Amino acid sequence: MSRNNGRQPDKNQLVSRFAKSANQVWHLGRGAYVRAGSESGRLVGGLLGIGGRLDREAKSRVYEARSSATEAWDRLESAFVHRVARALNALQIPTARDVHELNSRVESLQKAVIALERRVAENTTPGSRPAKPARRAKAGARGAAGVKAPARKTRARTTRAGNKTGS
Image (cartoon, rainbow, N blue to C red; front, side, top):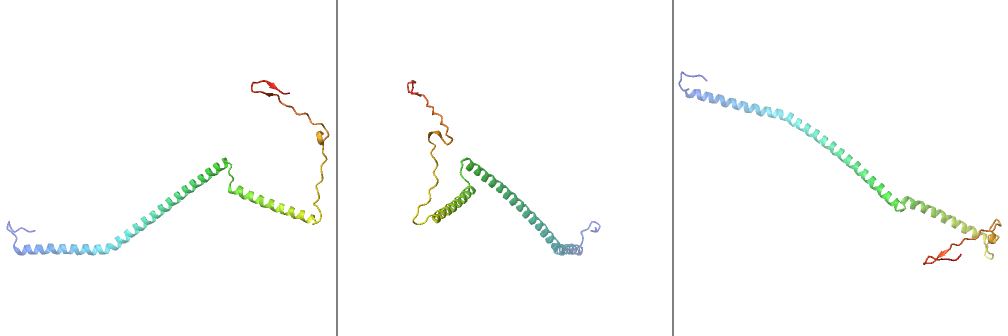
C-alpha cells in the first residue's frame, strides 16, 4: 500500500488492488480444492485403516467375552450337576448308571434262569418225575453236631403296676 502524500488512492489503484486480492482468493480456493482432492485419497485410506483396526479389536474383544462367558456357564453347569448328584445320592436315589448296571444284571439272571429251565426240561421225560434233591437227615434238638442246644432264657415280665410275673 503506497500512500500518495495523504491523498486518497485513485480509482484505478483500488480496482487493481481489489482484482489482485480477488485473484489471490481464487488461487487459494483452487489450491485448497486441489490439495483436498489429492489428500482425500490418503485421508480416506487412513480412515479405512483405522476403521479396520477398530473392527478387528472389537471382534477380538467380543470373542474373548464370549469365551469367558462360556467358561463361566460351563463351571456353573458343572457345579449344579455335582450338587444335584450329591443330593440324589444323599436321598439314596439310584443314578442312571446304577439303573443300567441293575438292568444288565437282571438280563444276565434271566438268561441263567432260562438256561436252567431248559436243562430241567431236557432231564425230564414226559412220563417221569423230576429227580428229587437229596434230603438232609433231621438232627432234631441236638443240632448237626449232636450237641444239645442251650435252653432259651425267658425274661421276667412286669405288669403295669410294676410287679414281676412269670419265671
